[in-house]
Structure formats: structure tokens, C-alpha cells
Length: 426
Length: 83
Image (spheres, rainbow over the protein chains, first blue to last red):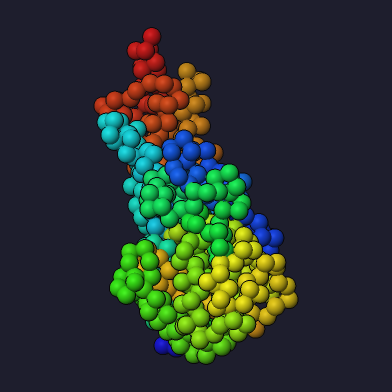
């Protein structure tokens, strides 16, 4: 089966912009969505800031009400809003609730790190513990289950291929794309909705806070807090939201005259086995370099062809290590290194949703010929300045630039690695 | 009585997909059969009613609610018991 896989629709719920149009405007302007969160201060968190999207005015709220989703977890709401936007963006129509046909050629893989923990922690746990479980609604199971987002969307869209959720920490959002890609390539589906979603909940964010991997020094200066690649980075900023892509077999896309954003020409996913300086929370450099090299190889191109990298780059001490891994994997450094930035400077780290929201930002850059600024790294980390030229990291938007090949990678807890190679389609 | 019935109807309307179904219903609609509401949602409707009228509906009373009139009489009874 020699199928080619292309991206035909995108939907996004991001801390700095809800909806593709708002998100595009925000990233062009270098606009951050990170704010002080009073609840975290009350709960004695070290890091009291984060990026939380505002979906109050979403055009899809009526549809959420219609399908009994108005009191579901925000995890599921973000995913459904992003999924419906992607569906319409791809040129498909939302069927009636009582339509007769099921599309057995389309499936959904929408993953999450912590799932509906907000709902579980604030509704289920207190009510059950107080013996008040009778106050829980009949929808409790479908709101709490990890596959809740995918299941909710498949019911609205009447889809009949595989409907599931993946989970691989910070690599989840990129992994979902790769799993959907594999399914289409093997001929088991013609199109897949793929992506990730992650919610704001003290019950999940506490894990990162007590690990002391979040920044505690910018509670009074949230817009400056997320500083990938800077010398003053000292921890990431957590974020929430969702990103969903419609990916499809090229033949199907051409047949229906779909607008094609880009092609996924190469992928690789692996783990560093937590050896050789790798651990649960730090990457084995061999594993990372292998992943990048294999992704490029699977795209059938030479590393020299990569025009731009959308990095994982979280605003921690791992950033210089990541840059070193990229230089070694591509065998490119100094002024020869591709352009590179990190969306996390504006959105924070959206964990399970990060990979997809960031892929969407990279595809928008390719499609509209620009590279957004990597804000908050005016003081470039000296270890990074040693190996790549400062001008490889845009401080201001770069317009009118042709990006033919883009590399997007996500590296996650568990020493897991994922990498996509995207190609501009003319 | 009329006020209670109207409140019940606005609660039930949240659970009907096809709002047009309300244009063609019998005098005393059966909640699952005439309004086509999924029986799994009865629990949620009862929760909404309890919240709206500030009453508690025990399991036995719940089982007796099949039509709008059934709901109306259970609610009236519970409101009386509160006094």
C-alpha cells in the first residue's frame, strides 16, 4: 500500500487563541495566553500561572448543549470544539443527529495526559466520598472515561472506524498524528481525526509543581514566564487546550477537491529506554537523535532539506540539550542550522495537547509563509549560542518565507520521542 | 399546577433532540415513548426537578414517573410534605 497522507483540516483551542483564525493572529503577533491563576495561590502551589483557553464564546457551545455536553469535563469540551472546527475546516458537514449513514472509513484518535481529571477530582471524588453519589448524573461514565473526547465526537459525526484515545505524556499530541497516519497508510482508514486535549486542574498540575519542573519565579510576571532557550528559563509553564487535525489519504483528498495544507512525509516514534543519561523525566540523547534521524529517513530526504524546526523546547534546562540533539541528528550547526522556535513561549506546555497545537502552528507557518517569533529568549542560553547562530531563532516575525520541509518533535516523560516531517504541497 | 407543569416542560425540553416533537404530542405525553427521551436520562431529569423545586425524590417515587402528569403529582406531593 503506497498511500500518502495529507492534512486537510485543523481546529484549535489554545491559551492565546480559540479557533484557527484567532490562533493564527495571536502567533503572528507573538501574543501570550499565560495568566496568573488565583486558585493556585489559594492552594499554595509554587507555580501560580498557566495558560487556559477561554471557550465561553465558542460558536460550538450550542452544539455542545444539544448533545448533552454542556456539563462535561473541559477536557472533552476543548476536544469537541477543536474537532468540529477541524471537520468543517476540511469541508465536511456535520450530520443530523438522526442521520442514517455511518462513515466506516473515518476514525478518531484523541489523546490526553490526564483525561477528565477536573471532573473526576471536583465532582466524582467529593460526592462519592460524602455518600452523595445519587447527585451524579447518568453521564458520569462517559464524561470521566479517557476516550470520552473521541466517543463524543464520533457520536456527533457518525464515524465508524477506530475510535480511541492514546496517552504518552508530552508526546501524546504528536503520537496521535503518527498513529492516525499509520492507520491510513496501512489502508485501514481513509481519514482520521487526530489530536490531543489537556485540561487545567490542580489535581494534574500539582504533579509538575511538586517535581519542581515548573517556574516559580514569574508569578507576578506571567507574560515573561515561558522562556524556551533563554538563559533565564527555570521551568515550564503548564497550559491547557486542544488541537485536532483531519488527516486523509491523498487520493481521497484530491477526489473531493479538498484544500490540502501539507503532507506528512515522514514519522518516527521511539523511546530512549531511560538509559544512558535518560530517565523518567530526562531524555536519552541517543534515543532522541535516532528518532529525528529515522523520521527524516522515512521522509526520503537529506537533513539539509529541513527549513525549520518546531521544537519541543519547554523553558527548562533540557532546552540546550534538545538543541544539541538536533545539531547532532541533522549534522548542522551555527549558521547552517535551520530556523527554530517554540510555541510554548506563548501557550505554555499543554502536555497531551502540546504536540497537536504546535503541529497546527507549524502547518499555519508553512501554509501562510511565515515564522512566528520565539518570545522571551532575548537572553539566549550561552550553551545554545555556542552551537547555533542567534539569528536562527526569530525574535520578530519573519514574513514571505518559503518553508518546504518542516520538522516537528515532541519529547515526553517516560523518555518517549516522536517526530514528524511535514512537506509543503503545491 | 400550571406553573409546575411549565417548569417540568422546560426541563424536559433540554433533553429532546428534535424540538419539533413538542408540536405533535398527546395530552399527557409519556416521557420515553412520546418525547423520545433516552431512558438513561430519567435520572438526570429527576436531579433537575429536585434542584428546581428543592425537594427529594426517593427511588420508589422515581419509578412511578412515566408521564408529565406523573411528574406533576409526585412534585406536588413532595412540596406538600415539605410544608
